[in-house]
Image 1 (cartoon, rainbow, N blue to C red):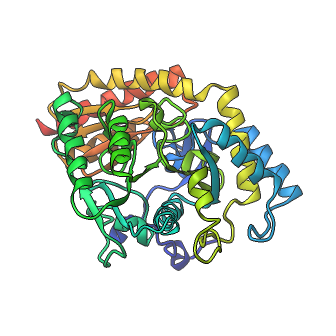
Image 2 (cartoon, rainbow, N blue to C red):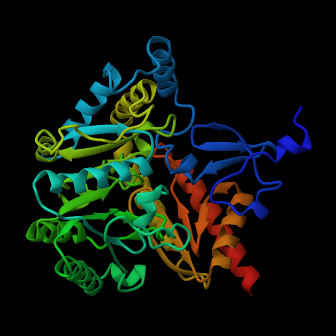
Length: 426
């Protein structure tokens, strides 16, 4: 039995300490639902930590982990490789386009960002060029470790430490709704063009295909294709952060596939292992990896972690790819996401809603205030749907396994929650 002191021993990240006492405790999860300690079941509109792409307790993923635990848990990646990691990286090379053939396995999206930046900057040194400037969105979120935080201008992640290399931030030129227009798209790409033209040659541009924690901002169609051309014109590497968007979340296997482009470096995590075990990946083109053969001290990639590419996590990731193919989860994400987006757009006349946007199974309701967003999320939870809200935006991102009936249930309950929030305003 826990005593009063041990009950408060957990320090939860990203949550004010004053809000941590007597908070909800999730004790069970099955399929697309989770249960709290009081016995109430909820539709999971959060996907665990935005990573439960195959739902909770999927028997094939549990079996894959159990089987690998019994055979080989892990081994030093500096000494030896192992079959699960070799198989996974080969399969990533098959599903990624172009020359994206070379993958380093890590533990988290933040680590993937760190590795991607180190690779990009070292690549230019390998070629004998002194490029070290990076361009990204002001509203970017690329993780919470030191280098990752340097890339973000968001108020809750901005770093107080001096950046180790020049970083230029591009702000959205208009509201998320306006930036999706043709005029907004032109203004946005013009800002990136000016950033690339200003200052010394840029080493890389790093962006998300959809700004996740930056407000679930859906970028205009064709933006990434235009950004790819800009990077090519200026010789800058294009790094795409697919940590949140990758593995079916946007209705395509990768978010950049909507624009039909190939980045130079791509970072992945979250859905790669379905949230069952920590895993991340950084994949680069073959020429980038080959530059490390002739780098000055020939030590290869000087970055890694004890459990990077963990054998059990890699085995589960291989099973995730099988499940996604067999159950057509990417296709389901596109279909259910379209239904969810269309249904939630019927709520836009509500006085507490200013925009509804989405791509695949990530849909956002932008409220007229942070208080309204909190009221919508609270009423939704009471109705039986878990959602997250940040700075006035409610995000809905259920597992890719959500069914047609569950989507209908989610729409009905969210609609009732919006009405409850609107009535409280009257």
